[in-house]
Image 1 (cartoon, rainbow, N blue to C red):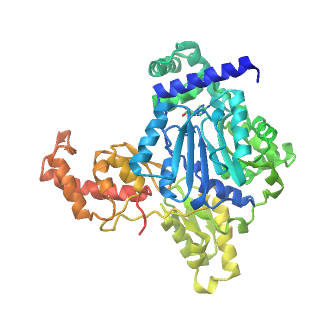
Image 2: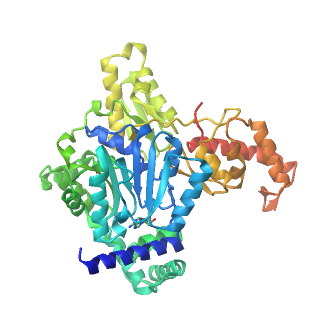
Image 3: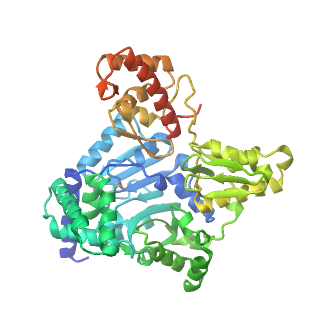
Length: 529
Ligand SMILES: C[S@@+](CC[C@H](N)C(=O)[O-])C[C@H]1O[C@@H](n2cnc3c(N)ncnc32)[C@H](O)[C@@H]1O
């Protein structure tokens, strides 16, 4: 890099820091980035991975640590390091770490271009929502860090905007940048961008895809917060690349493409048979080429790719067999339903209407177990032990493995290298919530993270009851504290728009507490006994 170019990059980094200081990004958990999920993908492709409970994890551009802080709470023996430029975001993360009392995580406030070697090697490196939003030399730095700092069995996860799909969004970004002033008042820039989009979507006289694109994005952006719009659409740098370019850049830096955090879109057999056949033909049966064609077909705008050191390339085995899933844990996104037809055909169906159909009646209890495991995970061993005694043999094991592999490849479940021990029932007399949820609620936060590593909202009632869900307070004690909060005016329930007072307010409160406990159980916030 020339001195002038290096100076440009430095001043761009400083401007980025200022933008995130002035309008911090909502710092969320991303289930797809969690090491247990990355490890499971590596495992199905035949690679070794570091055990999650003792892993070392680095997150580049971690904002306020919303992704790694809950993981640090869940895996106290693992070690987490975050790096982010923005002082405001890092300060918020450090306060949360201190409040929760975690000693296995730190967040450095610096540019990752300045990252030293003092933290050693990492088993997992996560870089979510950063790569496309930094200039080319910084993108190279991200890849260099992954190459240099991954342990021998390390896995990196980088997400980025992809072409050609992102071109549809480029029309929006171009229009916004032509219209909004170039200053640091991000909120008013977003307000202007929203106003422009509102005008364009209604007034556009186009009768084709342009107007449809405007209308579709206007609807979506209306649901998204200002910080997302500011940093996704209005940042100085947003340089999507093709999948092919990304793989080339990784390879230049000694890294090998492994796969995506979501397996199902990588499985050509999930496409209509004729389409899959044609993709295989035009891609010459080459895996990377077919991935590129899938982007063209789907119009995908965002990828979440896994990379490993190129010394592991020869170990990657993309021929997935039932044995590949044997030691993993599996999670569904919602409770599935098992149906039994008069001819004894079993159909396990998820909320997106994906299904597993089998005539193997021996699997009935095992599939019931899959449905019943939600919001927690299940393992192959769990299913095997649910088979009738007479089927607990090699044939039974194969039936289970094949069923699990099918659910994994169609996206009905995701694989994990560590279990999710979440209690699905709110029936315990003294329920226990995940520690991070208790602390977040006590701090007055409006959202927290579940054991499934998903965001869960907290309302005023949740702020009172979650901190009490430590196993030391039974439901009677929780109800008494809520009644106290009502008496003090900290919580108010309404009927027909009018505030309720005790005793009616207390009756409503008791009902609401039960509803919230069920909701928290379903969200994976309750720890299983
Ligand atoms: C769009 S946000 C994404 C935050 C988080 N990873 C997520 O996905 O929600 C990008 C983050 O990268 C950080 N960032 C950008 N350039 C950076 C750099 N050179 N060094 C460290 N952090 C950087 C920003 O401060 C910001 O917090």
